[in-house]
Length: 264
Image (cartoon, rainbow, N blue to C red):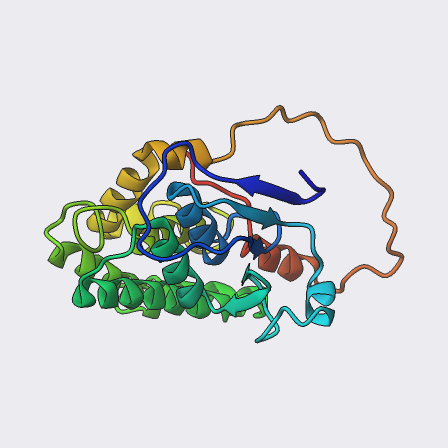
């Protein structure tokens, strides 16, 4: 194992219909944000070995020509780069043998991932606002006719139309479920001021059922980090004599890429 790089696979293989690359790397920080986690977990569930690279700086990846659109996560397969969440998630799912073969179901998976992206963009737009503006903007988002309620309502509708079986598409887990699971974990974490922790669970029952089903999957349990001792932090001097003029905004924006997993 290299520093910041972990070679991972699950204990039970799945059958893949496509050739697997000899070398596979996922580049992202040490965070469980859904855009990266959907790729990592899909590969892990299918017993697809990959290097989980979490210590590479964005500037270094950019200099190495790995950031096609200037952003992470990115996936590298035998030296070739793939970016954009939906493309990486679908490719990982095909390698893992968990992507639908039916064209309609595959399109519905894409629809769910795009819906998760819409939610992220909508909430992300509020992070640069001043506190008073942010509070009113987020209150509007979660109102019955709010933009966030609309986006999540679309995902809820997809799950309901799938028969309320606790999955978004079909009768087995897909990357659509993994995406929604981690997205809801972020929204329900309490780290986004103005979005109550029970907003999703109390408003969207089908999404809540999906989250519970994914959370109960044995491979998901194997993947999720185990609790670690939390020693009392030691006070550290501030090495920056000129701190950010708005540390609250910066801290909240970092929470967008939190390690948080929603509690049981």
